[in-house]
Length: 482
Image 1 (cartoon, helix red, strand yellow):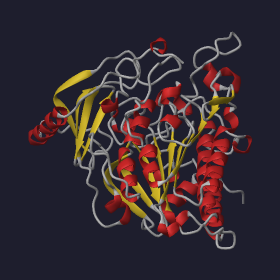
Image 2 (cartoon, rainbow, N blue to C red):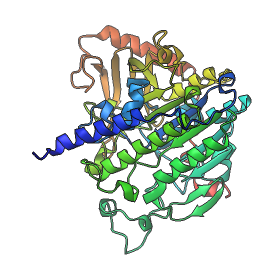
Image 3 (tube, rainbow, N blue to C red):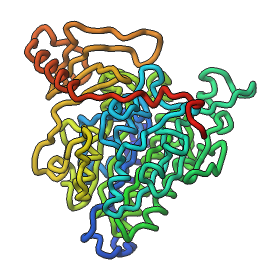
Image 4 (cartoon, rainbow, N blue to C red):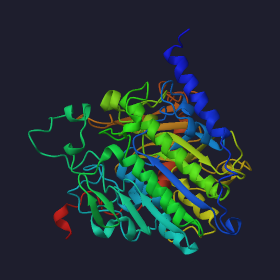
């Protein structure tokens, strides 16, 4: 009897997972000296535009992610994990600094991200996770999409990274202005590498232009593993911000037409493979029990690209919006022997918390000369207590749109993710109980004025110490010399 398509998908996942679990690292492990006597290694894998519902462990029915699912089964999976912004540049700034992007000038209501004609970037006075970890002798690498300033003063090695390999901004920028390139969105339906003149860089040098995006996920993976192998005798921090699944979508030949979900699924399944390669390398080098690996996304799925965008699952809206689908993302962490396997956490957490938690794990002081919005998640990770985060602020550029406090989320302003429709102010704010109503469908504002009053008081307190510097995103290229 011939198996159905659904049965084949299930069997493929089951066989892949069983094969991975049966592989014994003991015979191939290369001992690394004194790993228990040094701070833990830290790896952060940051997908681009991957939605809350795009992984098997988060409910996707046809995208096969056996290695990420296994990573979740061997560690902790957060169900209420948030990016700090709903678009690329401010979200990346927040993860690396542990601060809301409005505090570092990495937000704007005129230009939501940095572009090739932007003259600004992450300010030199910001303390990135890489720079802070250097205090403890960490080797640091950024491998992937940077998008925090392409000019020399803002590049990764100016922000604490020893090594950089990747593209300086989004892969849909530097679009070629040529009559042979299809107009509008037609270029994304059948994308070709030559349609975009995006550079691939090693440190400050362009080594390929246009970047061959069909092999970029594989090459990021290989670079990350080589860096780990070179630096296995000291603590290391690897920041791996993938280019994908931001459009245009590309994948390696080995992943062409392998997913029931089509091109988008192919891309996610290659990212899953990439994650497995990194985890396998850590085991082979006998480093996995002294390494915490994080996997998350910079924001929700780009729904306006239809099938070339992902899924936010049961959440409302996607990338670009401050509804849940724009900023609630997958969050997985694995550290064998330290994080209890099979943990599912309902605690509210954020990408900004990776900054503070990592510094605590490395025994590096958290900066006390500035406001740090990230909190310490060690109690959640190790199963010794609840997380300290009870409030999350949802900004769109410099404008505070919504606030989550406990189980409640108040929307003061709403606006579609994209398009010409402007912001709509709500008085009273729209109020949703996210534990009961994660899809944000049932406004409870008239029933709970006490909750709104409490949240409004939190907003007033928040604004008393908010000092927003001028926006870096609004500086034109002519404003700085290259």
